[in-house]
Length: 151
Image (cartoon, rainbow, N blue to C red; front, top):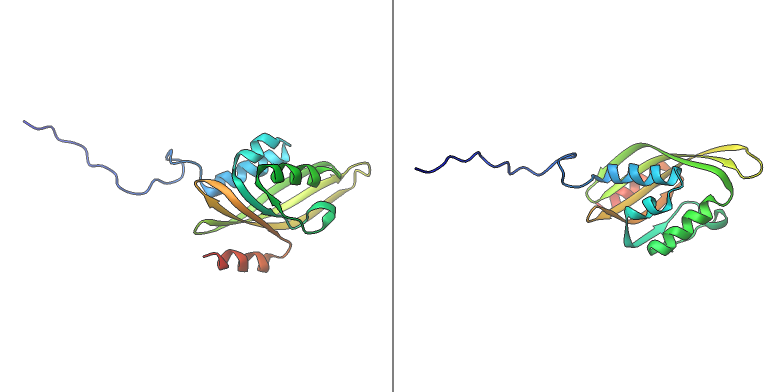
């Protein structure tokens, strides 16, 4: 006599199913680590060969960074002028392997203690659950165009 077996679930695993963190969960973890100034946790969600083009780089000019060493350099440079720099994601849009993260950056100037706030959008690409590319925009419409270009 054969045993009856329960039917197998062949659907794709969803968030919280143990299939690994979603892009949004990875992004939330990255920005929480940034705000906590936990560089090791921040770097952990990025691929070894990550390409980074922040909206505001060294000296507030455009810069590009490569790999974990570049990511660490950007983190250090971006935080130099601030006693505190919090990054608060408030909206996410996902298209394929790309994710737009709408952020509010809130910083307190080193020495001046003046609080400054800016809206920035990051468009990220993912591979195997890690960020492989991150590009920053100061304009929402440009970011959405970049998001759609990769689709």
